[in-house]
Image (cartoon, rainbow, N blue to C red; front, side, top):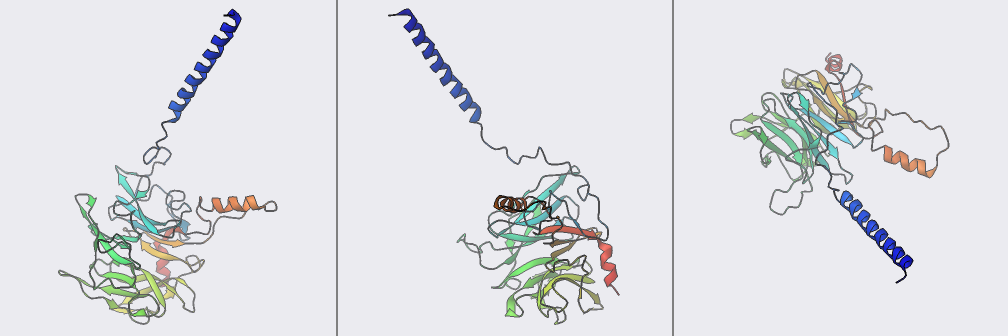
Amino acid sequence: MDFSLAVIEKTNTMKKLNSILLFFVILSLGCDTKPSENKTDDFPVLTGNYFGLKEPGLKPEIFAANIVSTGMLEINACFSPDYKEFFYSIMRPNGQYIIISMTNTNDQWSAPEVASFSGEYPDVDPFISLDGKWLYFASKRPIDTSHIQKADWDIWRVERINGMWANPERLGSDINSETDEVYPCLSKKGALYFSSGRFGTNNRDIFYAKNTDKGFQPPIKMNDAINSHWEGDIYISPEEDYMIFVSFGRKEGGGLFITFNNAGIWSIPQRMNPEINTTGREFCPMVSPDGKYFFFASNRRSAKDTIDQKLNFQKVKEEFKDSNLYPGMGKNDVYWVDIKVIDSYRN
């Protein structure tokens, strides 16, 4: 054999072997593609009852921007009485809702995660009783073994046992009907307020059910001063001395209304001011357990347009993508404001 050819052959063979070896090294490095579970390396350190945020004044501000309010259509704001848990809801791209939770351990809040009792069927509107024992919510989960979600919303609850939320249980047929029952809220005495489509009047009305040792009594529809149009999303104060709710179709406009209880007589509802009702699509009212802050959801747009050149199609596509990445882009975000805004309505 010619030596020069042999050297060339050997050289080529070594090149092939080196190429094959390099391929497998690269392949082995790329094989570890399993994503990390609940990656929180970039999640900020959040402490205190309200995540260490600067607390708002009399003008509503986005709550926990890029933490809770992120552009993913967030609603609800529910703190546990001991501020060890926080719950809210997100509307998924398919239009279904899911409940999200954050936990406070050793004065540090965790990153958001799907609540332990949610994630399989549509769930929304969490509310924790004042003793912290029960969490109520609305769900379309099946009530039989079919595993097929219901067409209408029912009110469910989970009990806190040994620091964990137990299996959900559906409230009885006195509370839940064959139409929607949503947005449960309880007073200090345990009276359950909620919105229901039963009777077919104005699509939605507000009901309440007193609580006894034997459970909830049959619900009572509130009077026509309250239920005059479409009413829902009720926050009842612990003492039942005032109530904030959503209404649409009134001459004043839509959005959040407030009414006060004077010796058992509810005042004519007042539409809350334009600082609150900016678009008329404000909803999901809630007050913090310490009574300091009023929370609600709104689709107002706070981000400013920054068009400095003629738009093209690619730019429009980028705008749509960006609208899901930031709060204040005209989608639902959670807002909060000092509770003193309510005092102006008391007279």
